[in-house]
Image (cartoon, rainbow, N blue to C red; front, side, top):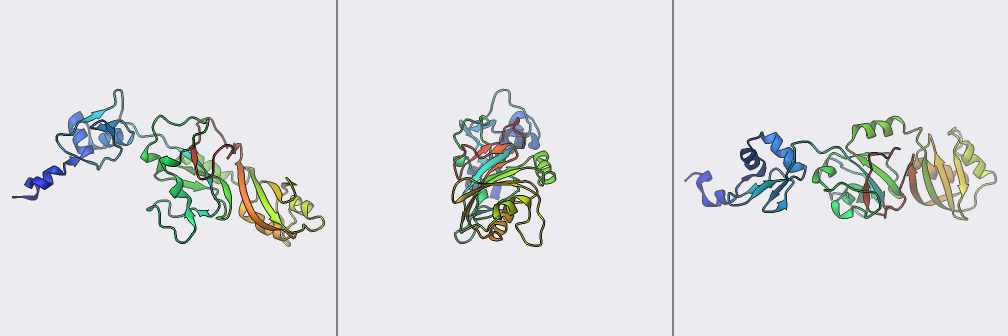
Length: 261
């Protein structure tokens, strides 16, 4: 008896994409598009993985009106907690070491925030593949992070990184040098290095608000150190016109088509 005739092999069934292609009379590639778009059910349960094995007695159906079209690229906005890095975006999840978490591990359907920004009708597994992280923040910092599949969004954030204003709230301790706030604002806080002028103001006795252009969040700690302050916490509130706003820490939401950085 050949392996294909063995009862156990028959019980394993065939790939869903192969079964659907035969059922619809379409190509395997088109069948995979139906499946990955969330339009296919097996025994009444939506299945989004083309390689899923189905047995002959299982019912395979396609949502009425569905077309074999690829899912549009998405951009995800994450409120990263402090202590999370961005690592291994194309590989397997869950391989960070020690106490440092991987921000990519937070991008799962269970962490979709219940906020007033609408979401697609169906959260697809495909939304979490091939995500590129733009404008990362230091591991000890929290706040807004951007992950996108959309090459237009990626290009904009890469090309305009120096011109987009980033707002950060920075917790500090120590006593600021005389004239230190002015040095932070006029770009002379780091000895021997000329930085662009930015907006820096006290929110209260321990927190500074930085509105940065041409300077990245990872430079803030050195800037503060040069005027007598130690950074003990940082949160990025905003990139351009998009804010972390009501997004809970550790959760994410979809960027809407009308939102612009």
